[in-house]
Length: 138
Length: 178
Image (tube, rainbow over all chains, first blue to last red; front, side, top):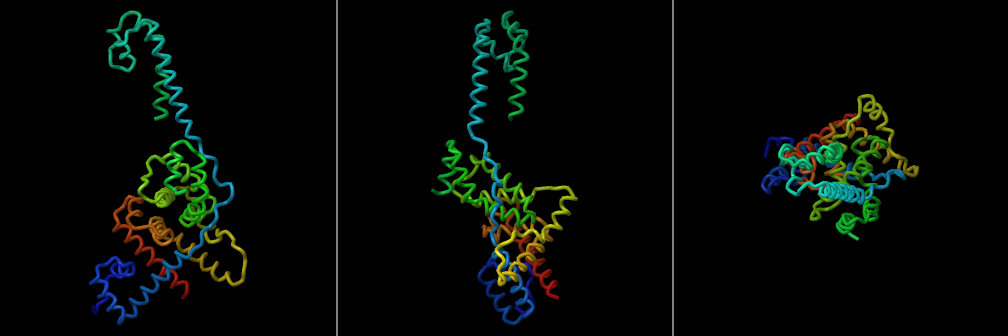
């Protein structure tokens, strides 16, 4: 190889990213080309210097305590208890199980029995708040 | 106890396991953040954020790969995307060359310290993508594939960043030497 390889190829050589044949060709070129030798030596010095940078101790007290993972479980438990309470209250108010679908939006309001409509109206603000909390959490 | 075992214990609710991981990696994460950002205060904030993010995303960690690679890549990504307003950026660049924490002052090391300061200053002149690639590859000695995955770019792009970064540093050092 008489002409100098492209710089990016020469750089790949220093990292051993080329196939064996190309590596050998560049090695042969380096024996006769001082400019490429100088460049390769410069890159190697740069990477050695970066490798040799010391680690720096993190300042004391950098990290605040991590939140406990139980927070998520507490929220899930609280929401489950809340939903169970609402379901029990609806049952006591005379809402039949198929009518519960209304509260997740699967049954139109007009098809509900009178007692279920009353319960739905009373529950509306709670249900709205709960949905907001769930949206915020998501 | 291995990192993977600590992660497993942490996922089972043992918070002390994560404290052990923090102790194990805080200097390494802080060093990488400092080398990328060039500012100890900013690096401190990013270190905190990296551990918090690692903690909340621990379930996404693939235990077949080294935890250190996952954590450091996460930190590098945060550093890469970290933004400050122009005024803070300017102040940071001015502080960068003086920001090396002081090791013991022994005469023989003065030259070495100066060399490290110069290198850090020149690293700060590089585009952040090239700096992150150089630091992950040479400083943290991570494989190309992990760097490419962490930075969401093809391996070829990482190779190009490494070449350009190394070439710029080589040229600037030559210029400084006159």
